Each structure stands twice: as C-alpha cells, then as structure tokens.
Image 1: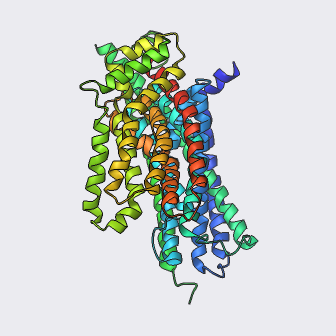
Image 2 (image 1 turned 60 degrees about the vertical axis):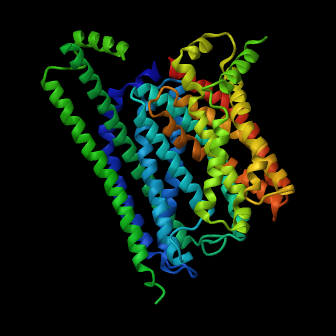
Image 3 (image 1 turned 90 degrees about the vertical axis):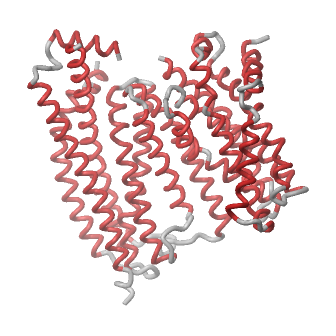
Length: 242
Length: 65
Length: 222
C-alpha cells in the first residue's frame, strides 16, 4: 500500500511542514549568491547592461514550461491513477505557472524596448510564451468554473494533456510563422554561444528560481489541502445542522 | 555611457520580478494563515475529521456530493 | 443501418431543421466579413492583402459559435446519457458527431467562401487556394473544438469558457491555414509547404479530438 501512503494528505502535510522552512532558507541563500554573481557578470558586447534582464527572463521562461510539464504529470496522475494529491498539486501549480510566464513576458518586453525600440515584438519566443500564458489562464478559468473539485480536476487534466500535445506544435508553428514574416532572427545572445561569465550566473539564477518554485508549489499544495478540509468540515457542519 | 544607458529598464525588470515573487509569497502565506484560522475555528465548534460519528457523516456527505 | 450512421444522419437532420441553426454560421461568417471593411477601411488593395486572414478569422469564430451546442443540447434532452450507455465506442460516436457538425456548419462556410471572398477582391487562383485551405483546415477547428465542447458541456458559462479554451489551441491551424492561403496568392513560400502541414494538423486533430472529447464526456457524466 505504498501508493496509498504517499497519497495520504496528512502524511504530505507533515512532510511539507517539515520541508518548507528548509527549502525556503535554501532558496534565499541560493538567490543571494546567484544575484551576487549576476551583478558581477560582464555586460554583453552588443547589448550592454540590458543582458542582465536575461537572468530573470530565461529562468521564468524555463519555469513556465517546467510548470506545464509538472501539470501534465499530475494530469496523468489524476486520470490514470486517481492520485488524490495530483489534483491538489495541479491546482496549486497553475497560478504559479501563470505568474512566472507573466514575469517572462514583462521582462521580455522590458528587454525588448531598448533592444528593439518597442515593448512588444511578435518574436517567436515571446509569442509562444504569450500563448502559453493564455493556456494557463484558460486552465485557471476552468478550475474556477467547475464547482465540484474532483470533476474540475479531471476536466483540467484533459485540457492540460491536450495542451501538452499542442504546445510543441504551437512552438513550431510560431517559429515558422515568425521566420516567414521577419526574415532573419531578431536577436541573439551575443553570438551563438553564451560566455561562461554569463552562463554560470544564468544557471545559478535558474536553480534559485526552480527552488523558489518548488517551495511555493509545496506551500500552495498545502494550502489547497487545508482548503479542501475546510470545505469538508463545512459540508459536515451543514449536514449536521440540516 | 552604454552600461547605464538602459538602467531604468533593468531596474524595472528586476522590480517586476520582485513584485511577482513577493506577490506569490504573500498569496501563499496569507492563504495558509486564512485556512489555518478557519480550520481552528471549525474545530473549536467541535467539528473534527477524526471522530468516528463524524467520519460516518463525512462518508455520507461525500456520497452526496 | 449502423448506430454511427444513424447518429450522423440524426445530427444532420437536427441541424438543418427549423431551430437547428446550421445556416446561422454562414450568416455570421458573412456578417463578420462585411463588417471588417468598416473597421479597416474600403481600400481594396489592403482588403485583398488581409482577405485570407479575415476569412479565416471569421471561419474560426463561426465554428466556435456553433460548437457551444454540440453536446449541450444532447445533454439537456437526455440523449447524451443514452449515447453514453450505448454499445458503440464513445470515441467513434464523438467522431461521428464531429463529422455531422462539420458537414452542417463548416462545409456551408467553405461553399459560401468563394462568393464572400469576392467582397475582398479575391478571385481566380487566390480564391481556389483559399477555399482549399478552408476545406482542409476547418475539420481541424471542429475537432479541436470538440474537446472544448465536451469539457464545457455541463457548465453554465460553457460558451465563453469554450472560446477561451479552444482559441489558444487553434493557433497552429490559423497560422498554417492563412499562410497557405497567402502562399496561393502572393508567395513567398510555395503553396505546398504550409498546406501539407495544415493537412497534418487536421489529421492529428482528427485523432486527438475524439479521444480527448470522449474522455471528457465520460467524466462529465460520472
């Protein structure tokens, strides 16, 4: 009955209560170190100091995709194994993914203004990211429309899996569309390879962001479990009263 | 000086990052407190998920839903 | 007659009878295309350039509009429960409903498109290319929409949610549909490249759509 034990929400809560402070502390430390290294990173010879925006932009783009991948795994957990924690984690993950994708879009357009002279370019990457953001919003909208939690979970699971199939196709289509309309690629990160002096801080920032995401996901999942307990107790209360 | 030419955009980007992260942390923390408070209140009213009679009731509720 | 053929005929009969609303899609299509020049101006050169885009957008919106009722009306009168308990595989049933829906709502659009395209100064080979892309691409729209319709079937605000869910998923179809239509008119890429991808997208959605929609319907009815 190992699966059942893992699925036990009380067990999860205990583990989460233990892990969250440590993960949070590790996140702060890693962020401090990564930001320090990012500050020391040299400017790009073409883009100057604005390349520092990349340290936010790329990790949030990465998290936006990682989050959908996790939601897809959770969706399989919901549909195939009926794992009760999968519902909860998927629901907690959606706003986080949306937030990081939004951050990616905002930093991308703030990077674009000095580089391209405009806040928004229908650049392939930004456009795919915009569609990803829309998909997150539609998942959140679906969560908020279906009242029954487990039915919502399964509807969202199907949408998540369909999205996971469609996302690479969207990415490919947008790339194709973009090269058709714009000719050569609009921007490159100072040539084809990234210099280690920039790559190392970038990886550190990505790690820090990932740790932050994991902490937040754990905490949001914990909240979601508590919210469901509250709901169960309220229903109990109502049935006792009526 | 090219290094500080677009400093406002860099600051704005990092400010946006800070806002998003602080908002997420605030959302998670405040939500946690809120749910804990409601749970404590419900338990003070004598409701518990553990008691046997209520577990039967909870089973009944789940079938209702 | 096999159950699937019976269902196909039934759905088509319901769609074309009074109150079925099959031709409303065409009217909507015509209305959207006629209103667009008032927004972008009567410049025929411009309209010709963005004509395929306008027609594709109008077709996308028209198919979204009609999808709302695809499963909802069956759910309301109880026939969806009958279908679910029937012996025919649900995936095939859903596919049959999708085909019936395409035949009654999207095919009229494709037929009407050459006439409506004249309003945007498209003619000859441009028109032929456009109609061909619509003919090949609209099944993808219908079958992607099936998923949204199945997810939203029991929801009160189903129609709006359907659009929100389906629109981002249809981006590739829109890109390659319009690109193929434009390629038929002006280039720069040969017509075959985007058109082949459009065919591939349609084939993929013909497979994925029924499976996902059937899964969604099963859980809706549990």
